[in-house]
Image 1 (cartoon, rainbow, N blue to C red):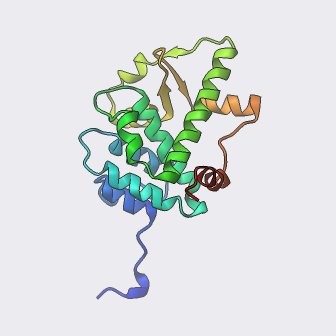
Image 2: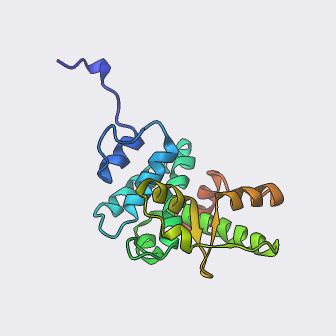
Length: 191
């Protein structure tokens, strides 16, 4: 017999991992970054049927400020994956209509941030690396890690987390915090 006080509530990680079909125990559910990568990698796939459901849960999580960083990480990983333009993954045009109002604000904030990182990086005069070697990786675990941590630019070059960190240190402009969601929703008449 199961004791009711021994039950643990199903957390955000388990809920999202269930939606993308990852079995209990196959991913460390206490490692938020790994959960975000795995969820995004599967939800981005064209052959995955629960993408809309995953994004519905993401939208629900955004009702709680404490979930903001987690959700932004899922969305950023998703953006990075779709940026690669691979047939395996949905496009931005396919993902965007599935986003709720809060998720759309986060999505647009991420896009704006990465445009700023790109502009800054190009302005430094340091050459960018081509994305092709990254997209040729065959190892599934390495692919998941690197494809979610880097994004492809329209030039066929890539930007990654290291570029974003350098940008933040040089310019001091991180992603906006949770409070910008309410401001943006009020500005659009949704809040």
